[in-house]
Length: 77
Image (cartoon, one colour):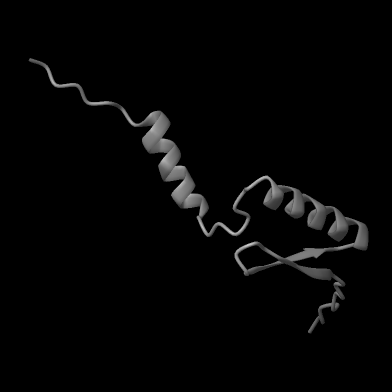
């Protein structure tokens, strides 16, 4: 029976405190990657973007379809 090699993953993590009191946890493979992600989140928060949105891709796809692609029904008189 063949044995699988165990892979050791090392991630750096950091939490960012948001204005509403919640915390956003970020993870990166290197310290530089983590620092870049933290900086991006801080910039987005200062710009007023909600970085803790819990919308799923399915919800966003349905919104896109309803707004841009759904045919408009027109009543004929």
